[in-house]
Image (tube, rainbow, N blue to C red; front, side):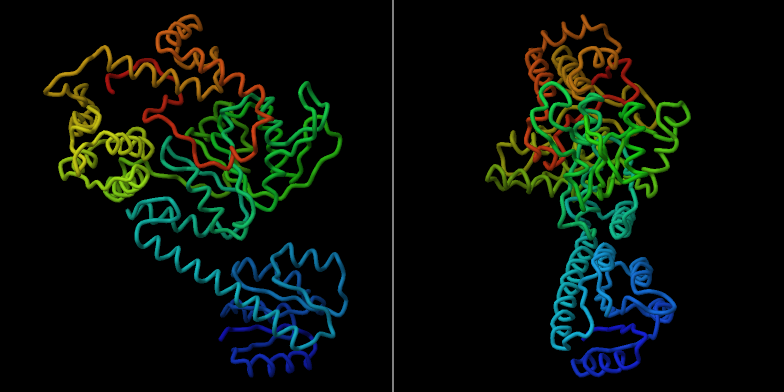
Length: 503
């Protein structure tokens, strides 16, 4: 049994449909026009609306648009004696479930209504499942039952139903792409593509061709037309990670796309209309970048219509046990093992500050699962940074926050390990540009090359640069992969003046 709202300016149609659907066991309300219908709908939303398109006071299309704002999940069937391609297209664009022409066959309309209600039931079941997931401390692949994460879940579920641009902010490793994917999966666009790209991993020229596409002959190597990611994400969502790394000229081009809903492929003369929801993310302070002139103010307001800020893991330490259990199960399933977590180990994990956030915790558990010879993960399997961490000293700003382990450590090997991690991080962040990476590390290019040779990674950087040059030949699915693994320690966004002791 469902709640139906019949909207038609013909009294006979209203009476007929009331009789038909009340006999089928549904609750039926009627309205003679769009304004009356919205008044009833505002008081008590219906499960399904059957509405005429042409009515004197307010047309069905306009009524549908407003009803969707009140209750995005409502099912809608439009009917008219004046069917046209334009009106049908507009109705479906606004999310109408079906469109039927008068005079209609009552049995055909009953079948259409039954199918629409069946789809609605599936939506409600999915929503109930998501609510149950959230109560268990999980939404999609996001883990956490703390109050801060519950607020994030609520925001995700709310913004998923509207087409507005979303800006996800938070420190590196907090799970910004997981949030973007959850928004997409809960939205009406869930069955359409979700496409992601790291804006900081490409040069300006490559980023433009990746986002907007290009036409054959537009540059050397452009041997065929290629769709950009905005076009590939048609009717779906596009996730722009690290949007704060965009160059000023690319910011201008992105702003135009957001304003006009059109893209111009590289080398093309014609613009293409695009319909893809934009979800952006950054670990930088865009408001501060606006003040210093490195990020456009108009673009900032365009991308931050709905902001979602993710808390760092240190501010939701009560979620650590759930995260640890999740990652232990994940990596045990991959290795065919069955491990538990020692109580002392869990205490150490809960007390650590996790500067790399959830990503660092995940890598720590992956390593522990791989190295643990017993049936329970022991403290010895954790990095010395975790086992020697002194939270009281860290809170007081003391330099002995990371104390020397009782058994001592190999300081040279320890610092070499950190050095390699930061060099690789700088290269990844700058699309493997040695000059830009050297600048980020406050080194000369010659000094950076010495470190590349020292750690045996010069050939890797050469290969990655070559991969960037031929990126247009890489299969599209690379952008649909889960968030790429990053190392436990992320290079500070304002560059690094010194490397602290650690592992």
